[in-house]
Length: 206
Image (cartoon, rainbow, N blue to C red; front, side):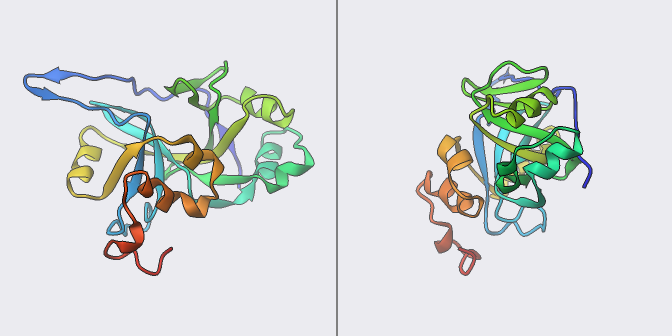
């Protein structure tokens, strides 16, 4: 699978706007957790880091679905020589938009050519300089490589939330980086006191 890294940051800008008596509440720096009823074949049992959310829409990356290549394959695809252990580092399906483009979710934020700040410790970077640093065992200390991203138009995510398609809660770095991908969906829900195994439709999918 060919891999390309985009060179521009996402055009969404953080924004909270008061319109009359209605206040827009951004879910940037949150986790979206797919409810068991969301069986659309795309986002079933996914966890998404929301990287930007404003009145124009939202974007984020899926952090618990693997693809069939590893970091070694990804680095070679952009002519970067990987170290031997990179063969054991997974690559993630970040979402259905631009699936041939790579995005690095990482901590600490650091200084890179093209990054979107998520919080004081976390960023999404799309420029190749970060891959060079990873190959040379420099910063960032923790990272995930995702192919593609998830996106919503204006009010689309809000409508899906009203339809109970998603839970949302605080972004937890341990869930993002420290747990196996297979455990992140239930672990993210547990942060909210929710046991997905007890919800309708979740039985048998632990």
